[in-house]
Image (cartoon, rainbow, N blue to C red; front, side, top):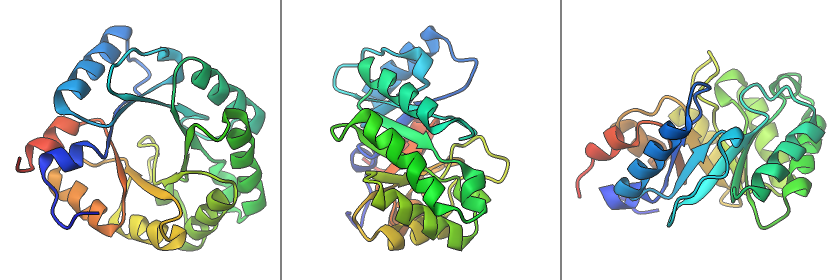
Length: 220
């Protein structure tokens, strides 16, 4: 990663995100239009909003969102349908309770089910809800994600009351995966300063709903 972060560089690391349950088709189109204007990497929308037509943008979606308390087979089916409808990246939520209980085999099995459902050509990001976990559980989940063949580990849904991305969590996640997986920081990132701090801690992708505000804080 570069040591300095200009507007264009950071834009290409952003998943411009709209996951509010009240989002309409018009809202999604506005998201796509803004994403195109800002020059971001991807748009991330709820699976029910697919298909989305967005030339030049990667389409991402979520599975088991936001609680993670869905049967693994349901997560897999949801993710597979999303891929059939044009998603190229899937951000799945683990069973957070299994992680809290230290049952990393269950976490592994959950991720494997979705990995197998979408195939290897789809980018799979694993949301661990880091703010709700101990450091030990964060490490255990990251190791499970790596074993399952995930492409990224991701901090947060942005919907959990425990909070979103932190520098400490991102650094721990990055140290654990050691470059084998990407690290997506998401949840509560509202300023350029926050974004840069997370990138410097090891994040390789950012999930933002307020992408414009973050990018407006960066130099061209």
